[in-house]
Image 1 (cartoon, rainbow, N blue to C red):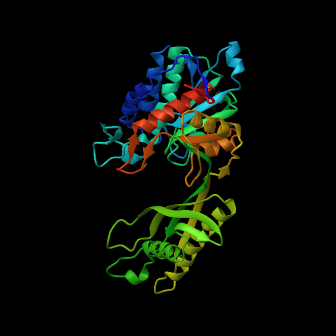
Image 2: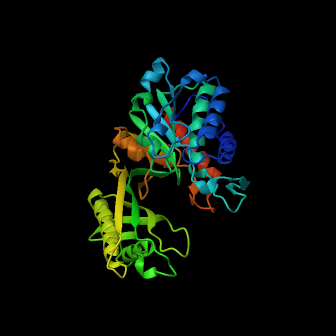
Image 3: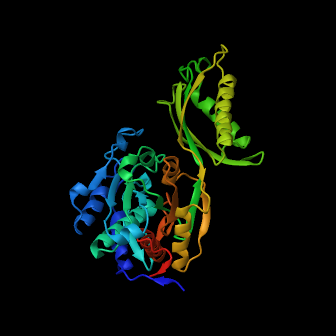
Length: 406
């Protein structure tokens, strides 16, 4: 029989209004200020002073110049019960959305929320996570519920390579022993590992010439790029990759080049990525991408036998990780889900999550979902019943009552 909590409980349906408001706030990567101000305003209403916030300077070290850094709030009391409830825990979510969600107009039909504008995504990734963490923080303070020492963290620039988590100032987190990150998917899904991602910029240099008078004098950077990408596709090194018992993915996501149809294009910029849970295989994917572009450079020549050249720059956005299911944060999350009547679903993510960098920083972090579906698409939706389930699970974890009945 589950133990019963004797502390007051929030009305979890109140979290619905928070998430509806948050999804309507524009805030892509690097433009999270309006979301942060909303969070601060909600917590000021329950007595959190401006001095309680810590905002780091992560945005000054990221590839883009953002408006602000990561934002943290620490709660701790000196009560005997708080000490009894164990070491510091951290609840976190990322504030940014992808550009397709700008202009979202959340509308509810039954328990499902979508954007009423068919041209935009909803932004439940990850405003639903932001709402879960905010709701728990607000209600803990409002109801004066006992809890272990807590850190609430809202990160920036997750959608462009987990940049906020990568550059977080660890000193402001208070050395949490257990950490829980809310992102996409089912509230019963526990992501205990994720792939690693390498991002690369490729500059293809050709030779310009008049496309009408002297096309044979030119070397088309577009032709080089096309030949390389076609080879990668035909040989199984683009998209889903299964080779020699290993699995990974790659994608050419950005191509820019050319200024006029009457000029043989002499420069094309390409941005690509490679992902795999196996770091050695991920490096192999990167080498295959580079080799395909080098071979294409040699194949595409002008009538004089001259060829172009290619330049590569790349960086590891985040490395892969996988936690043991006996890690304390995983066990706590499993217990919270079971106490709420659910069955935990352990998962390994094919994309990166902020937990990749938290794990690298020495903070084991399990990622839970909030009821979102089809992220980064105009068909994105949020199931409010599952969102409320995520709030209940988060409440259990924040109050260290994951083994108790609510």
